[in-house]
Each structure stands twice: as structure tokens, then as C-alpha cells.
Amino acid sequence: MNTEIFLGALRLKNPVLAASGTFGYGEEFKDFLKPKDIGAIVTKTITFSPRQGNLPPRITETAAGMLNSIGLENKGLDDFIKNKAPGFRKLKTPVIVSIAGDSPREYGELAKKLCAAGISAIELNLSCPNLKNSKLISQDPKTTYEVVKAVRKAAKAAIIAKLTPNVTDIREIAIAAEEAGADSVSLVNTFLGMGIDVNTRRPRLGNITGGLSGPAIKPIALRMVWETAGVVKIPVVGMGGIMTADEALEFIIAGASAVEIGTANFIEPKTSLNVVSGIKDYMRKNKIKDIKELIGSIRYK
Ligand SMILES: Cc1cc2nc3c(=O)[nH]c(=O)nc-3n(C[C@H](O)[C@H](O)[C@H](O)COP(=O)(O)O)c2cc1C
Image 1 (cartoon, protein in one colour):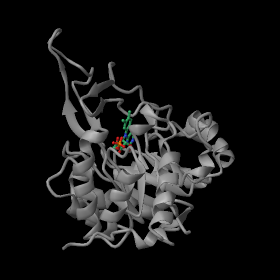
Image 2 (spheres, helix red, strand yellow):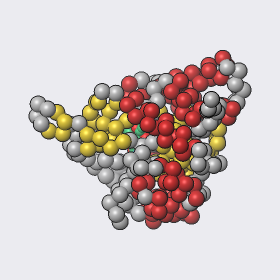
Image 3 (cartoon, rainbow, N blue to C red):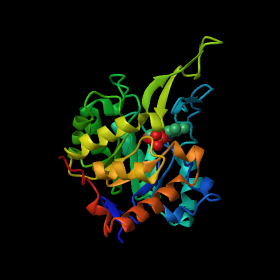
Image 4 (tube, rainbow, N blue to C red):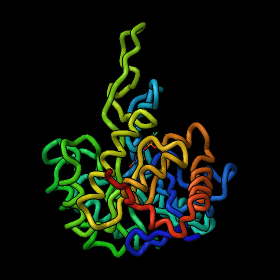
């Protein structure tokens, strides 16, 4: 049975990744699972300089998911290269570093320095404000193109462009990323939302608004992955509310070459592992020899 997939030059032994911001830097989860058993780990997003993040509270539960407004808290690039990157080899699975910058140039610089430090795969968190027009980068095809192009020029790494779902038509953004040289696109990041505590009449999040994730977003994320897979030739990495192997399989059948598991890690830290074994069980039961037979296999009657 073959579960291997490629995202550009990046080979993954199976199509299940841990999503950015929900799995730390990999090390934190080693009491729950062996990182080598999952396809790859995407790190929490890092930025050039340290960031303190948003005012608390930063997380609140919703009926079928959670809202977060962490605000990219991290210790910055230099600390990451010195204290986190050296431990990655021990994890024995590819580590994809998620980055965010203020401009195409800053994204390029970050990628260049990471490559020099031995990192070979990068996920571009494009859900950051674009300083020029106050939209998020991946709400605008032109800025998306500029950022991906800058990283493509600066670094030899495999590039995954991660898109925001807070757009009217995600396909035009995915096409811009592909044209600029991304090796794959991943979607979705969180949906903009908010919650109010009626007793205090205050917002539930310190930042007022935040990103909705978890089961509530799954049908919308699935639709967006299916739409995107229909228009790009590069692999699509799907995510949004995946809790079980069957849900991961829905994304794969809709056209995702791989999936990322996010919010589920907070409920059951072994979810990625359970999804890997569930996909293998399904393949065995349905006599599927290669995961590629399943990718985009949806049929219309
Ligand atoms: C607490 C939390 C922190 C997150 N931090 C990041 C981040 O730093 N960078 C990023 O690209 N996505 C981040 N995300 C988004 C997830 O990677 C994922 O795209 C999203 O939550 C949808 O998947 P899910 O429903 O499986 O969680 C975060 C999500 C959560 C819940």
C-alpha cells in the first residue's frame, strides 16, 4: 500500500500533516505520538522580529469549534534558528516552517535565512495584513503573486502558499500563487468571527474578532478545496475541521493531495496518528493500492 505523496520536491510518507499553530514546534507532542508516524509538521508561524501577540483572552469555544486571536506570538527568526531548528532532525519527519512578513521582501528574506539554516520546506502564512491596502495578503491576487514570487526567487525550499478563506473566490488567489511558482497551496486558514459574553456585554476575545476553526467550518473548507483543486495543477493541501479519518478522506476525494489537522489536536493530541491509521484501514478495505487513486476521485452521477 502506497501512501506517499509529493509537495514539490518535498516527499511525505503519508498525507497527514499537523497544522500551524496547533502543534507547537513538534517537540511538544512527543509524549502523545511519534512525530515520525505522521507526514509532516507545520510549525507555528514565525516572523522576523519577536511578537507579543494580541491581548488576552485569545481563545474561546464556540458551538462547534473555537475562535482564536493569538496574533502570531513568537520569539522571532534568530531565536527560532538557534533554539528550535536544531531539534528538528530528531523528530524524523519533515518540518515545514510557517512564516509571515510585512512585505514580499520580508517574506523573501525570512525564507532565504531559513534555507541557509537547513530548512527545506516553507508554508507562507498569507493571512497577514498587507500594509499597502489593509487587506490580508491572500485577499488580493496581486499581492499573493508578489509574495510567492519573492520567496521563489530568494529560496530553493518547497513552497506551500496558505490561503485565507475570507474571500469571495479563492480560486483566483490559488491561481496567482501557482503562477508565481508555489509548489502547492494549502487551505483554509480560519474564518473571521467573533463572540460576545452577554453577562458582561464584552467581546469574548481581547482582540474582539478572531479566527473560527474546527468542525463548524468543515463543509465550507471542503467546498473551497474542491473548487481550488479544479483549477490548479499543483497539489492542494486541505484543512478545516478535520477530526476523523473519514473527514480527511472527504478532502482527499474532493482533490486534496494531503490534509492538515489543527483544532482536533487540542481535543485529542493523537488525532493525526488516528487519521493516518484510519486512511490505511480504508485503503485496505476498499483495495486501494495507492493514495493517488483517491485524490480528486469524486464522480458526478
Ligand atoms: C490556536 C490556533 C492557532 C493558529 N495559529 C496559526 C498560525 O500561527 N499560522 C497559521 O498559518 N495558521 C494558524 N492557525 C490556523 C490553523 O493552522 C488552520 O488553518 C485552521 O485552524 C483550520 O483548521 P482546523 O479547523 O483543523 O483547526 C491556528 C489555528 C488555531 C486554532
